[in-house]
Amino acid sequence: MKRAVRTTLKFVTFIIFNLITIAIILLLIEGASSFVLFFQSMVGTPPVAERTHTQYDPELGWVNKPDVYIENMYGPGLHLETNAQGFRNAEDFTPTIPSDKVRIICSGDSFTLGYGVDNDHTWCQELAMLDNRLQTVNMGQGGYGVDQAYLWYRRDGTALAHDIHLFTFITNDFERMRSDSFLGYGKPLLDVQDDKLVVNNVPVPERAFYVPWLTQNSESIKKLKTVELLSQLFESSAQAESDNELAENDWLWERVNVEILKDLQQLNRDRDGILVLVYLPTLSDYQPDSQGDTEQWRQKVSLAAQDLGINFIDLVDDFRTLPAEDVPALFLAEGEVEYPGAAGHYTAAGNAYIAQRLYEELTTLPEVAGRLADLQ
Image 1 (spheres, rainbow, N blue to C red):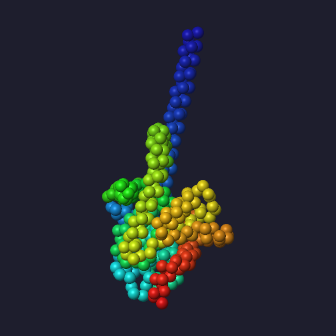
Image 2: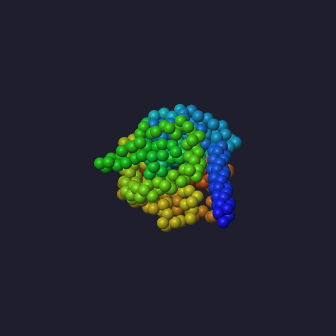
């Protein structure tokens, strides 16, 4: 009887030992597979396009390198060129406006920069091609939020006399203002104290530029099982704190944007410039969503512009009147440009459409029409 019990115990122990061994082996295989997939993803992840033509800036996070010429930046024949001032233009600009020109500064993000097209086919440059009386300065930058576009104009744009300032944005540009980083790269964070704008997180941390491969693969790192587990462990307490911050920031967020508009208005008035806010459409804006962020921000900007007496051109409604079959040609398709995040930016046709509609709207503004009439 005792021998039978011992035999059974040995058998059970053997089974348990083997099950534990198999479990450990499976865990090791799972862990190894996770790391293999991680390294495959890391090797296959190209850097963001902006890393090829931008450099660290302690006040803005990143800014164009001056005097850059990249022949096939977005594909064969699609070059990117910056001037000595770091703007996406072939020519340098004098502090004063040429006597035969109306100068326009175009501020914004990658949709203004002209991501995916060459210098001659950005909508900002297309404006100048529609009317030879116009001289356009392209101050668009990939990844910028409303905050960075404003800060760059305040620092470098105001050094140039200009007739018109087109301050453009898409819906995501407002969301980017919530964070002190974008895709792992540090950026300034605006706040309002005593009814004045305050710039925090400056000098902007430079560490993302030290090890760019680590920064560009941050999303792959987050998918590692170890990282996911640690994130879940700390998620509960962090979520409660995050919810409180978001509730507070919604109110602060709007205050910051209003103060930005006030300062932009004053900066342009001081330079005898005309400020025009422009809401640019994206592909996701084609189908209206009354509860979506786009509709909410369009309304907020419209009300603020009306209250402050600032010109506001909203191109979203006009975009929605286009036949559905015409829309895809205006935006880059997935894989059309090799960089991550390229899909959805304007094609050459999309930039031409924006330029044409913007020119038509601009010339209906009495102040703008007056400046142009002075050159006739």
